[in-house]
Length: 401
Ligand SMILES: Nc1ncnc2c1ncn2[C@@H]1O[C@H](COP(=O)(O)OP(=O)(O)O)[C@@H](O)[C@H]1O
Ligand SMILES: [Mg+2]
Image (cartoon, protein in one colour):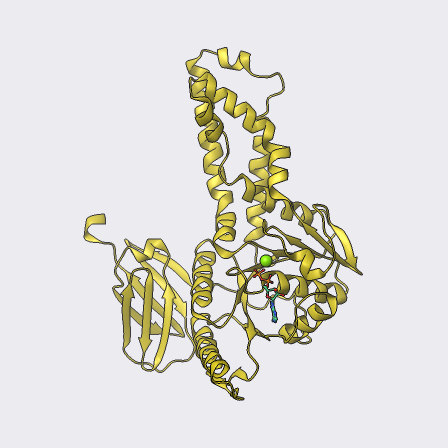
């Protein structure tokens, strides 16, 4: 069983690449489901066939589904929300506020994750490819199991206290069938889900990029946070590379066939620049690439072509990389960021920090990093490069001591 999850900024090609991956996987003989959790669905357009909330077969071995998250929340959680709302109102809370508070934050995210989990654990599929919402929302989705647990714990404690305070009166007022009865099961499901989503044998996260500044930054941030939460990233896919732009064997972007149009040529140069930057900033992740097609990427033949250009003969379901592209370790009161780096010459390491951005310079090697909040609020103390790893120390601040 494999779950492949594509993340990236809106419009970079997540839906298209998820669909292409699923098609190729199906054609290799794996029963594959491609499922969209983005509220702004476009999977149906990409596959050029109508889709529903339930999985339907769209080609041999290929199944697709567009989950309607809002409907599901209303259907399964409407009752619980109504109950929580009335409980809060009995506490003397204003109706509008009570109803607002009864909405469990992150319910939508939990519902789409549970759907993926359900599809993955039915045994009906060998593979589930997830076409996710843009990075920010998906990151929220992936960190949700933890915050959800927190919320449920709080709610239980609060419920217990309310019952104690009202001397059992509240319990007598409860409907006979306790709508909270389902919660422990849900908490267990969410925990099981988190185990699956952080198991590198099962799940792989892939960052979809275009060779341009904002997209690359958002992608780097996603890698930072996925690593922080222990979610396995196994590749980056750079999509929409213009014709004539390549990366040479040294990892430098090159314009090998400059366009005669000055406007296009400028775009080619920008792309070449970012292609090189991606090689360094996403190291040691394997980088897969696909060109900007001269036609609309809609329908199975187009998707088949795109899959061939990204994966060649390789099975897209394989695990492309094992390990964490970066790691934060605690050493006493300090945090140390451990970063594998390509073979750079031993040289003095220069660090420049600007907000949550850290620029690492070693000789003529330059790499830009996006720090998670825990590190961004400290100063970078110093760095040592040894055994292919850069260890950057972030000492505790005086006032934290
Ligand atoms: N390699 C490509 N060549 C040409 N068009 C592409 C390519 N990749 C994606 N597209 C098109 O770009 C648009 C956005 O892609 P989409 O997969 O919907 O992005 P996302 O899901 O990341 O928002 C779609 O119209 C899609 O057909
Ligand atoms: Mg999409």
